[in-house]
Amino acid sequence: MKPVQSQDDLNKIKSKAKEKIELSSGETCVRVFVEMGSTGIALGARRIFEKIVDTMKAKNIQNVEVITTGGSGCCAYEPIVRIKKKGVAEEICYTNVTPTMVDEIIGAFA
Image (cartoon, rainbow, N blue to C red; front, side, top):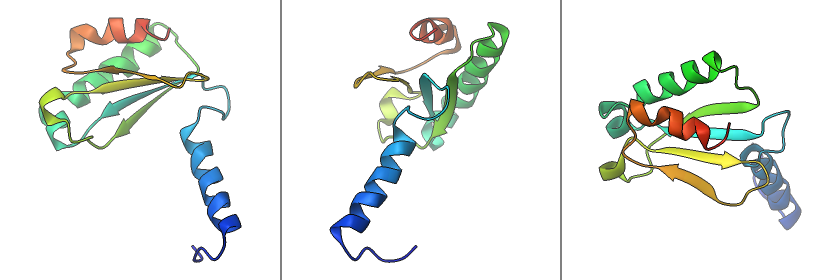
């Protein structure tokens, strides 16, 4: 990556990063983020991730991207699942998630 030499270079980088963050690509309408830092994994985040994916497949839910992220530093609230809907500024955040909560979480966007 070449060094930033102008405001235009910085704006281009910002624009590319924003495209990755926003839900403007393809058919994706919802992104579900499962935080999988070491604490999250120790508290069952991998099980939560797998249950979300399996439930979505079983219900044939499409246009949803499930993404793993690192931890946010809020270890006391792990596992954490965040939902970002296209065109909505706010995220929905679930904390201390258990496998029994997956249907409720999917219901928030399906």
